Length: 334
Length: 268
Image 1 (cartoon, rainbow over the protein chains, first blue to last red):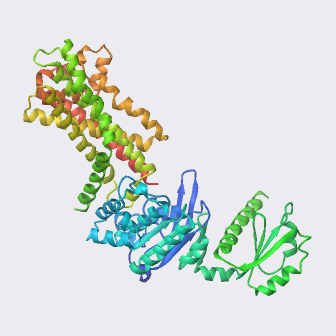
Image 2 (cartoon, rainbow over the protein chains, first blue to last red; image 1 turned 135 degrees about the vertical axis):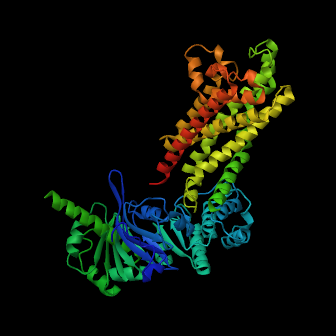
Image 3 (cartoon, rainbow over the protein chains, first blue to last red; image 1 turned 180 degrees about the vertical axis):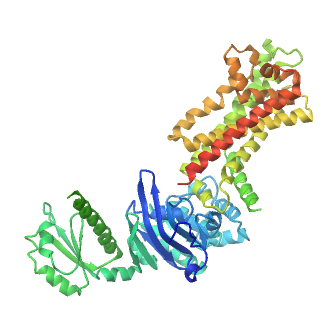
């Protein structure tokens, strides 16, 4: 698609509130933060962008929220092109940033009122009261924000992001730095608000178990490219449902174990102190195959068999990409 | 309508931030208030003066305090930009459905509003302490415009620095350097004709010198403005317009620099 062609209007699928096509972003250096991303998010969907640090998630969110100018490619949000119609893009979004972005010397309600004025929210006071109740902050509405806990600040930011009834809400690592209870509460608020408001949500997170639980679809991003995209459970099934985690004794590396496993079914994920084998085989068969190996001679101290998760998919895909890079680098040196 | 609503929201936010920090407002005003209430009258009593037989030194120096408080306070207001940028709400403002240029422009307008309040404070305190002012519509209006241009221009410089300095703590060291040093060279406390050669010529190009001259022209009278010490002309009107022009150029250049720095800092 030519860089000058807009994807913001026309076409049967343009009802999708987020459309990204061949998006690239190169920073001076050059640093290729995003290297040709394409994806669509359907209305009402919770879509997760997953990836390691530096994968390009925040840059992608930056482009979609008009904070970052794309180098090439297309992106449209709410039917508006991020390049040519940024003000209308911003009118159709709500954003919760990675770190807290609040006026600390103002109360929670005052923070929401500023947002309501900037987004020209009709019947603002009623809506502010409703959203503060929805995120459980009615009692603290008039307290200055610097007295809020991390979880309260996040909930206030989510209420603020929803205030103008956006078509798309972006959550960039929304649970970073929160304790497990605050994280659980936050996702509960997100789910409830999504059901109530029908808003489309694009989120990036490091917490893969949360993504598996919350997202309708995810894209795993690594080194600026999408390496896999789909429903979390489908991605897990595609890799294999069962995982055997083999822990290695101190002083043993995985070389001998990997050699012994060579040719056996399943994907191998190397960890810091062991190896995980992800397999589509039934659990008993997987256990029997591995148990048949001379495990103690290979330095294996324990074996745990469990169901596969999105975390395994993520580790498999990002590790594969790293190994491919190493292989191609070695090839080019040769 | 949309642009005006966004501007008004951002403007009120900045004014509210200024009002919410009374400690900062009072501490910035402390030195000029001390001059108006204590030092000025004391110096006037010793026989020091403006060398103008028609003007008492206290009234002369009281107006001089305005060119201390306006730039000093404007530089302090630049700290809000650093705070918004590093710890605060700037990114939230950047994703608001408004023209982004509205963000710095609304801040400049808010600083000028605070400056108007500070001018009022100095004038009222001075009158209560015994200063004699003679207001005329044209010159007083020119004086207020001069005060606004000085405050707006200095704040725009503060914004430029806040968006371009690599190390935020450097900004703190520049507050007294930019906010207060020119005050000693601009004729706020003594006529610039008394300054040594070299320094005197430097004072001619300082926006502070033009602002204090115009403020005296507006509040005390043309005899005490000492515009002729800068321009060496006879036409008071021409000198007033020229000094307003200097301040307008200063403010215009600073605002252009601030807008450019803002754009470069906020769009990756």
